Amino acid sequence: MNRLDYLVLIATILAIPLYGLWRTRGSASLGQYLKGDTSIRWATIGLSVLATQAGPITFLSMPGQAYESGIGFVQNYFGQPLALIVVCAVFVPIYQRLKVYTAYQYLGQRFDRKTELLGSFLFLVQRGIAAGITIYAPAIVLSALLGWRLNLTIWLAGGLVIIYTVVGGTKIVSITQRYQMIVILVGMAIAFAVAVYRISPNLSFGSTLSVAGKMGKLEAVDFSIDPHKRYTFWSGLIGGFFLALSYFGADQSQVQRYLAGGSLKESRFGLLFNAAVKVPMQFSILLLGAIVFMFYQFEKPPVYFNEPAYQRAMKTGYAPQLAALQAQSDEVFAQKRAAIRAISSAPPNSSSGDHNIAMTRLRDLEAQARELRNHTKRVLEQAGADPKSKESDYVFITFILQQMPHGIVGLLIAVILCATMSATAATLNALGSTTAIDFYRPFIPNASDHHYVVAAKALTAAWGLIAIGVASFASLVENLIEAGNILGSVFYGSVLGLFLAAFFIRRVRGTAVFVAALLAQALVFILFATTNIGYLWYNFIGCAAVLILAPVFQQTLFRSTDAPVRV
Amino acid sequence: MNTGDSKSDAPDWRKAYGLALSLFAVEVVLLYLFTIRFS
Image (cartoon, rainbow over all chains, first blue to last red; front, side, top):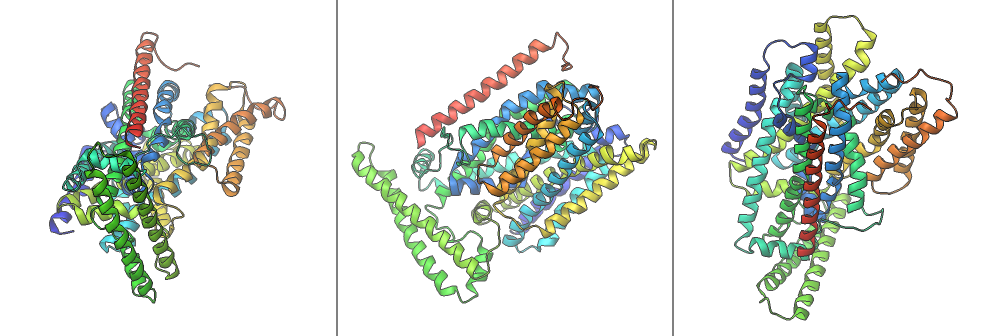
C-alpha cells in the first residue's frame, strides 16, 4: 500500500461516520435513539439490512471459499428470499402494530417475562461473541499482511464504531450503512472488472468460465440429498430458510434495521429488496473467487497464501522442506498452465477423446497442487508458524494487495473495513438496545426518557468493549465465514421456535414453551458436540424441537398453569 | 392472527410477494442452467 491507498482508505472510512454524525446531531428521545425516525426510507433500510448481514467475512472469506471449493456456497442463501417474504407477511406487521423496541418484548407480551429474557439472553450471548468475530476476522488478516499491529487494528476499527454508534443510535447506523454498502458494492464491482481484465491476456471471459467449470469450481446447484454434504439445494432451501427466518425475524440486529423507518410499507420494501438481490450478489462474489482461482492458473500463486506464516516457518529448521515443496509446486503450476492453454486453444471440433484425456490430466494436476498446499500447511504447523485461521481467508486479500492498481487497493481495504464497521455498528446498537429495554428498564421502571437514552448509550459502549475483548482473545476454529454461520445456527433454531410458537400455536403458554426451548437448545448442543451433520440443519432441528415439545408439555406437564394468552 | 394489513392493501402485498417468489425461482433456474453449461 502506498500513500494514495492510505489516503483513499482513511478518507473513505472517516467521511461516512462524520457525515452520519452531522445528520444525527442534536438530542434524541428514547424512541428516536432506538428506532430512528420516519425520514428513513426503504432504500436505506434495504441497504442497511444487506450491510448488517454481509459483514467483512463475506468479502474476505467468500472469494477464498470459491477459490478452494467452488461456488456451491451460494445455495446457503436459497432459503432467504422465502424467509424474507414470511418475515414481511407475519413478523413485521406484528412488531409494527405492537410498537416494540426489541423483538423479545413481543415474547414477553405473548408469553411471560422469563420467555422474553430467555430469547433476549440467547441473542445477547450469540451476538456478543459474533461481534467479536466480526472485528477480529478482518483484523487478523489485515494485520498479518499489512504489518499493522493486531490489537491496534482491532481498537481502531472497533473504537470508531463504538463512538459513532453510541452517539447516533439507530439512525446513524442506518445512514452510515447505506453509504458503506454503496462503497462496498462499487468496490467489489471494480475488483470483479479488474480480475476479468487481468486474466484476459490469457483467456477470454467465456473460456475462463468454461475451464473453471471443468475444474469443478462452478457447480452452483447440487440436488444431492446426502445430509453430510454441507452445501446442497435442499440444505440451502430448508436449513437456509430456518436460519434466515430466525435471523431476520428474531435477531434484534436485523429487526432494529427494518423497524427503523417506522412504516410497514418502508420496512417491507426494504426486506423485499433484499429478497431480490441477495442470491445474485452472493453469486457474483463467489464467481469473483472462481475468477481469482483461474487468474492463479496463469500467474504463479504463493505456495501458501498466508505469506507471513510461511516466512516465519522459513526461518526455522523447516526451510529445506518448504523449499522442496515450493519447487514441486512450481513444477505442477507450469504443467497445469500448459494443460489449460492446450485445452482452451484446442479447436472446437477436436476429438472428445483427446479433450477428455487432457481434462483428466488437468484434474490430476489440480489434485496434486491441493495436496502440496495441504502438505505445506502441515509443515507450517510442525514449525509452529501456522495460525488457526484458514489459508483460503488470505486468498482474496493477497490478490488485492498484489494485483490491483494503487488507489483501488486502498478502496478495497476500505470495503473490508466499511463492512466491519457496518455489521459491528448494527450489532452493538442491537445489543445495547436489548440490554436496556429487556433487562435494565424493568428494574428501573419509572425513570425519565433521557435516563434511558443515557443507559442505552452506556450499555452500547459496554458491549463495544466486550466485543473488542472477545476480538482480542479470539482464536478461530474454522475459516471466518463458517465460524459466524455455525455460531448462529447453534442458537437460532430454538429462538425461532419461540417466535413461531408465539405466532402459530395459540394454546401454548409461557412455561411450556420456555422449557421446550431450553431442551431444544440442549439437544442442539449435544448434536453439535457429537455429530457432524451440516450445520444449517441445527436451525431446523432446534426450531422443530420447540414446536413439537411446547404443545406436548402444554397438554401434559403444564396443563393448568400460566396466564391466558394476552396477544 | 391480525397481520396489520388493511383489506385494500392485502392483494397488492400478495402480488408483491408473488413477484419476489417468481424472481427467486428465475434466479434458481438461471443458476441451474449456469451449472449445466459450465460443469
